Every structure is written in C-alpha cells, then in structure tokens.
Length: 336
Image 1 (cartoon, rainbow, N blue to C red):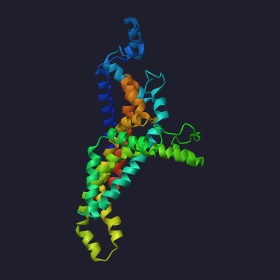
Image 2 (cartoon, one colour):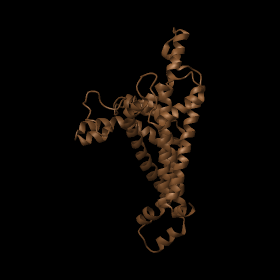
Image 3 (cartoon, rainbow, N blue to C red):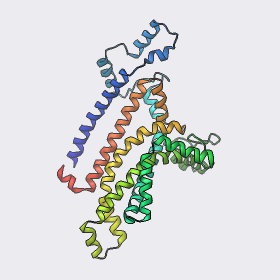
Image 4 (cartoon, helix red, strand yellow):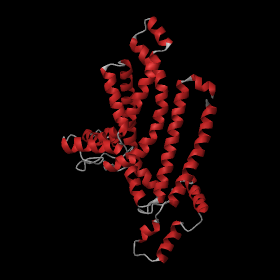
C-alpha cells in the first residue's frame, strides 16, 4: 500500500507541474496586456515598456516560466498587479472563507447524496424513488449560477428568510479569528449570535454548491445500492436472520459507496471552480470572487496562484480518495 501511495505522489507532482505550465502559457497568449491596464489609456509607450520590464514581461517565455517555477519552490507566488500585495498573502487571507464554504458544501453533498440514494434504492420503483430520481435529474441539469439566483431571489427577495449577501452581519462584532472559520471561531468564543449569523449567511451558497454533488451522488448510490442488494451475500445474510438495518448499513452500503467515493473526489473540481461564480453572486469574501476580479483585470500572478493552489488541493484530495478506496477494498491493494 505504501508503494501505491508513493507512486501516486510522484504522479501528482508531475500533474501539478503540467497544470502550472499549461496555465502559464494560456495566461501569456490570451489577448490583453496587464501593463496597459496599469498604465492607463493615456500612457506613453515608454511608460508601458517600463512596466513590462518591472513585471518581467519583456523576457523570453521560457525564462519567465523558469523564474516562476523557482519562485513557487521558494514559496513566492509573485505580487498582485492590482493590489501590489504578495499573492500568497492574498490567498491565505481569503482561503478560510472559501474552505468553510467548500467543506460545508461537501458535507451537505455527501450526506444528501448518500441518504437520498439509499432511500431511492430501498423504495425502488415506488413513489419516493420516482420523486428522488426527478430531483436528481433536475439538480444535474441546472447550472450553478441559475440555482444561486433562484435561491437568492426566493429566500432573500421574496420570503425574506435568508440574510443579505455577504459572510457576516455587519451590525455584529465578529468573533476573534482563531481558525479563520467563522462557525468554529464563534463557537470557540461562545458567541451564539455570531454563530447564527455566520450559519445563516453560509446556508444558501453552500446549498447551491452542494446541489450538483447531491444530484450526481444520489443517482450513483442508488444504482450501486440496488446492485449490492441483489448480491448472494446479502441473500445469505438475510437467510441467517441478520437484522435488515445491519445488512443495509454494514454490508450493502459499504460496497455501494466505493464508486461514490471515486466520483465524489472528482466532484471536488466542480466545487473549487464553481465557487468562483457562486462567491461573486453571494458577495462571499473568498478566493472565488477575488480571482474573478483578477481575471477581468488580467492579474496574471493571482490567476496563476489560484490555479496552482486549486490544483494542489484537487490532486491531494484525489490522493486521499485513493487511500480511502485502498482501505475499503482489499482487492485494489492486491492489484497494486
């Protein structure tokens, strides 16, 4: 098993370097000149050339890439063209908000996808199964930004049940920052008003991100669960008189979750890049909205820094999925 993990790590390093190279090349060939944006429309060619020199854009492309890789190795992601702050500082200051949103969405997606998928399998071809399948197809077919706008309009604009966009009530004093997660920090400070405010602001964007994962997850779990329940070992367990609850949770569900775990790791990519649009719609002060502003401003260091960090999170999340798969399925360990 250790050998498999080492091979995965070597492959992941190559993937991160490849993603960095492709993103770097795309960022350099797309139309637009960040020097012109910084200099303004009335800048002279000499001023633009000076900015090119300051940003290192006048050097050959391979020299720029080598310099960027050397900086990454030493923890230097460059300096934001717009804010003039180190990109790593910008990312670390905004990362807790995005992580809190993504982790909440992942928990909702995991719980919703598994529970609804199991329910649909247990009540196969009954009314509950039909309702869940319709909800699954609907969730998969709807784009995330449309779900966000509908939820915001309905629960904030019409019903008034949800608070306005943002991460926290501006009239309240936020808890002291310990972890950067408002939910955790408010509990550590025993400030339940702050916790309620943070949770209410988090609800709609987290549900929006979780909907797509729930839709895909419930279909996959339903199919895997139906297949597992038809296996001989399940019939044998029932013949021995084992409780139905134990058969479902201890035997059928364990095997049915294996395909779901794999797909759930891949779904992380949609959460990472889906947060870019969702955070902007809900005015969530995280990496997503910051990167979207950087894209419009052609702030290449920020775009590159976000892509590298997202790639690292994604590949290590999939490494974790592989490890969990190895632990749950001994057959894979034997093959590796």
